[in-house]
Structures are given as C-alpha cells and as structure tokens.
Length: 228
Image 1 (cartoon, rainbow, N blue to C red):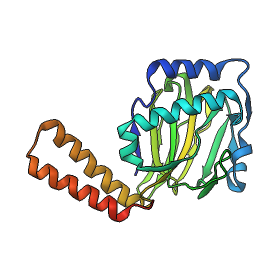
Image 2: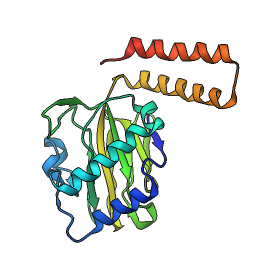
Image 3: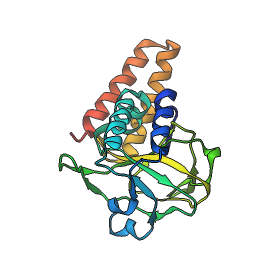
C-alpha cells in the first residue's frame, strides 16, 4: 500500500528546518554509515550526523508532528518508530535499488524494531531539483513519487525501491521506519480503507446505526490483527 500524505509539517517549522539543514555548519556525514551490507554498495548521499544537536532537535519536531497527524496514524497504525534521519542528495547522488533491512536497532535505546513501513518526508519543493524521485516497485510495476515540501510517502518496507539520481540542485528529505500494530500490508490496507470510509460518513452525518456498525467492524478487525 503506497500512500501520500500531505502537509505533515506546518510551513513555519518546515522553513526553519530547511534553513538549518542548508546552513554552512550543518554536520553532514557519509550516508553509508547507516546502510546495511546491501544498501552500502548502492547508497551515495549525505546524512545529518545522528548524534548532533541539530538532528536531535528536529527529530523531536518531526515525531511530534507525526503523532498529531490522523492521516499518518490511519495509514501506518504505528506501534514503534525508528528515529527519523535527515539526508541530502546533491548532483550525481543516488540510492540504487534495494530493500530495507527487516530489523533495525534504535541507536539510543538499543531496542530492536521490525520495519513494516518505510517513509520519506520531502523537505524541499520538487522544482528545486531534477531527479530524486522515490521509485517503488510492486506487483503492479514501478511508481515514481516526488512530493511537495512537507508531504510524506509511506509504502511497505518489503518493496524494492530507489532514489533516482539528482541531475540538478539539492534534494532534502527525512526518512524513517514504522513497526506497525498490524504487520501485514494487506490487512493495513483494508483497515485504512475502512477508516477513510468512516471519516467520510462522519463528515456527512450519514446513517448513524450503519456508521456505528462499521466502526465496530473496524475495531474488531484491529483487535484480531493487532500485534502489540
């Protein structure tokens, strides 16, 4: 299930974050330091030093925004979140085809986290660079996503995906992974569709008994499928 979610970050926070990442003293390091064996061979980008004060400050801002966003909660049903990382792609940089590692270890807590959902939060406008699309491959073919600043794309971590080479400008983004309450992507997709229908019924003040029945089905399915 590939879902684009608009306006995860409010405009003022987004502007401040972009200014911080674009400053001359931003502590960028080789992105391969966090790549696994497969990814290191095809990953060519820069990453904000995870231990830096800048990364810690903005990680908290991003996590707080995610926790408040109903679209993100509905699409991913988060149980745990791997700390967001910030990356930079200049001209010629790319991340070739790869599948994200199934288990990651939180560098702060040492906790192991299963990566059910991969996420990319775009931090600058697509007009500022050429290339840089996230290309996600599934049974229906390849899908290219190049979101507006502040938009998020989430997709199954099992997917083969890549970041197309940058041919002009600089691409800034934030990436992270979600361990979902529901590990099966097909089940998450059904719950997301059901929740979307419920929200539309709420807005339309539709037949209340029917809405209550649908809400009950949603929670009973979630109760059956949840892995807590």
